Length: 479
Ligand code: PLP
Image 1 (cartoon, rainbow, N blue to C red):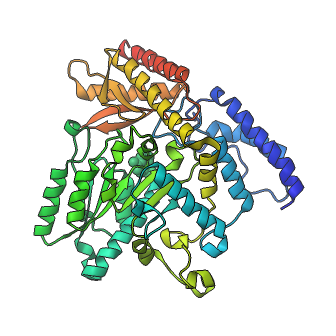
Image 2: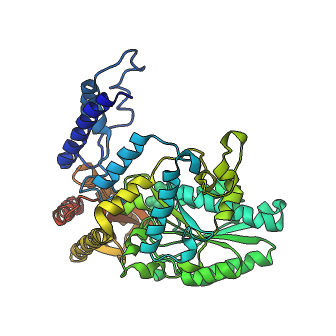
Image 3: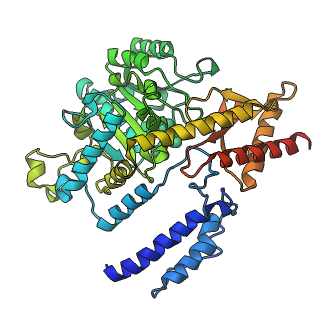
């Protein structure tokens, strides 16, 4: 590492990125390239000799940026946005600069201890029960993604139940979730060896706005118990991926607790909103959960990746995930004086990710973060109002946070044609390059999703997005 080169190149790279943000609105939000475009532009093998930073940056401009979908564009409304901020970016930089690998406490004590402290801070902001904090047997850990979070708790729960009923019972273990649960759970079940026939995907519908009905869970659990199976894991959602449905945690948790099942709450998207007192109600009942997850990289100004997982019983995690090879032994770990996060996750190595969350919390403060969330929700309300004033459109599910689910209404009750028309509208809007929205299906209906949550989005971008959607719709309807 040549410090002077870092200084010179680093300043130039920051300038490059700052200029990118200045001109971000000039790019088509959704990349318009065709598959394989980059193979045609880059050589077949790596260079034998060094090239200059100018050469590389020229290629970034000419060849890479056309193939980038601009997630940080103020007109990015697809999926759930993934936030970047100055504080998050600086934290990432510092983490890369220090270049540590903090798998055990001893490999960088500050990395472990800052992670514990910052997750306690956030648990306090979310008003999570004390059992999720690091004082007792609980605590928080940063995972790369919500998918990793659900996988590690599923494995912890699996091993916990197998320790009591015997290893041969794996085939009998049953997992429960609603049909709105993210496919991350299905993947976790595949990896954890849960029998595919033992994954109960419970039906939801518009009557509960796609929230899981506790009575359906109770019926399924009773049926499985009668059949000699072992219910062991429930995943509930606060803010589903398709439509931000909120499952009734307290009622579901009661059933899970009564049946000694592990209860995981996936609040990957909506967890951030729950730092605002007026949205905290959506996680009421979290005290009955064993684990709780939110992605700070979605809606909390923290650059990807930073998925926060809290558990009440860290022993369940470490019993399932710890290894203790000779080459990693050290006094602090052997004396059981410290947390070694390698035992709370799948990989060994881990980055110093708490730095960026710490910087976000310190450089912005929780009141700014609350205003940030509230502003997006206000913009989403405005978008919802615009949609509902247009007779060609309808709101499909009531908006709770900053996602609006809407669609073109069917003409003469022709649902199938209506789905095709909504797909055509989605394509037309996204090919315009002026904004990017995504879609889902609810009760067989193709639904358009406008998720407001990119840090640079202002009222004018929301209004402009609606104008483009209306124009494209009008063109389609009169074709
Ligand atoms: N859970 C929910 C509710 C989500 O919305 C998402 C992604 O959008 C996920 C899980 C998966 O997230 P990740 O990409 O962090 O694995």
